Amino acid sequence: MSTCLKQDSNPGPLDPKAERLPQDHDATLESSTYRLKSSKDLDSLRNITEQRDQWRGLSTRIQEAAEVLKSHDCKVQPR
Picture 1 (cartoon, helix red, strand yellow):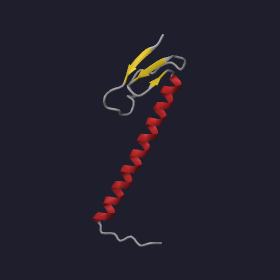
Picture 2 (cartoon, one colour; picture 1 turned 135 degrees about the vertical axis):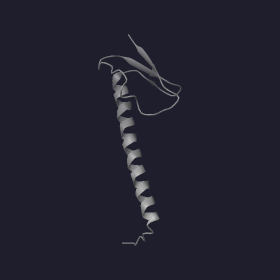
Picture 3 (tube, helix red, strand yellow; picture 1 turned 135 degrees about the horizontal axis):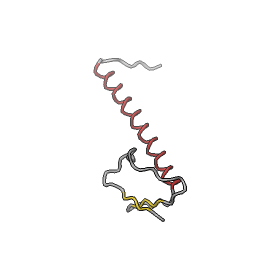
């Protein structure tokens, strides 16, 4: 038995409150650009989403640190 999950128009991280599927459950996630057929595919998508969120967090911290340096008129000297 397959379950269809629809992608929201806002492509954000997967909802952590969403019901977890059993590992052997054959789930289908459909959208206009991709179709996932197994829980292994869904797990891979979750891992990619988590990594993307970690990179976004790191990028945000780097940008904030750069703004702090600019606001303090710190001069950067070449090594």
